[in-house]
Image (cartoon, rainbow, N blue to C red; front, side, top):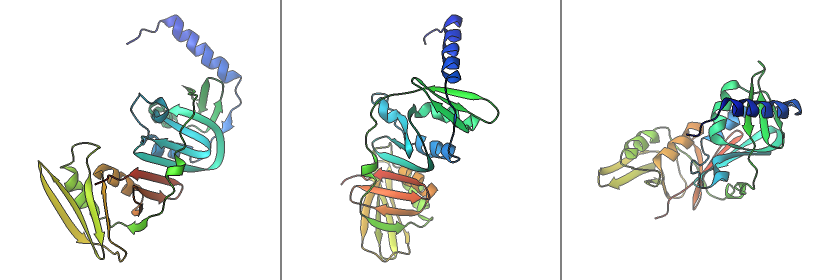
Length: 239
């Protein structure tokens, strides 16, 4: 760990205070904290690609990705563009900010009690992820009972690269997973009369999606969930 001396701390505080003094605070959208809480969970934790460890806010769009999942929240009112480390935003939500200001090097947040939370501004070109959220697919309303099978199957998945197979046919669904540790073959009824569907997905990702909605669009390579202003896309596993 690097040692920060008292003089350096005082200097940093003075720099932040000077930046804040020159900044014009603006009102944050009322749903900003909710957007941050939902999207920051999807940001990458792999520091080799700094952009993907950030939450990107551009006008009405709040976006995060780890190259497997994409989270997108549509704000009702636009904000200034900002890119912030997702790990820092998890602390930000605790002060429940209502105002913000973007300066050359800092992004300042302030709550109604006068508490200020300042974060270093990250500059760069965030990848265009929204183009990957638009695709055709089959819409399915998954029964909440499917979580029982997903929970059992998740015991036999070892990491984020492991997947279960979900098969849906008229009136029936099946969750299948076989590994060295054992086999799960969970079957039950479903209110579905469309064409047969079979896809592979990490069980934890499926559970995460179903927290927000049980309506899922299954495409060739991705699955998409939409709930009010929030959208979550995850890649599906190939054969």
